[in-house]
Image (spheres, one colour):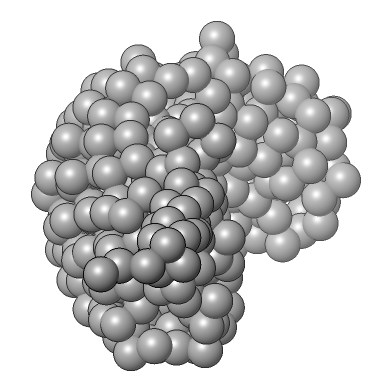
Length: 333
């Protein structure tokens, strides 16, 4: 027969268990996914706080929201993570932010499971050993506002679907091994003040004509294999602040290009530009300017900040002359 003391003991035990379960904020499905991620990374020291007997909302490197108590952020900067990014990251459906930064031993491809994260806003995988292509289905994550895959070993081409992301305001793909053309869809970015960094890759072909209608704030396409005429990126009514097209094979006449009055940084060195420097450049408040190693001719316009840059900003052109280069002869004017 059960004694009165036994009944009291069982009631207290049940109450304790119930209280513990009610006091834990972490959603059990999120905890399960995180523990699978920890196991996939082979139980690294950086995840020592990920103890199954504690509330996962109190663990390091993750963040719970205050309404539904779901994991909304997973963030790692430096540490001892190694191996592929686990596919189980796609089992955290409320994620808004993913960050992996400075993990040289993080290898493999970007998991396609991220395509399930329909609330994801910020996706940053930088300075890692990640390789392989960008998942083609990344364009299905309509909530994305910022993508940064810089300083990795990513290969393949750029998915056209990225250009159709309605909330995307910035894209960094610089310092990878990406090949092929810039997608035509990149003229369809909807957000204003968009910035685009894709330098140090193996991109080829011309700038899509569709990009002429887009008003970018920052563009860096330097050190690729791009060709053709990039002048549609410019325009006197645009709000472009910085553009770096250096070390490509762009071939166009600079004479008639209309520059935005907002421009403060212009780098066009090591291309195949012809023509002369427009006088309108003297009206810009440039703090960086370089047109060296091209095929420009004529006198450098006097005024503005153009004479504040030394000769290295102008040298190795066909017949460019005037301060800060040597004076022009009659035949060069």
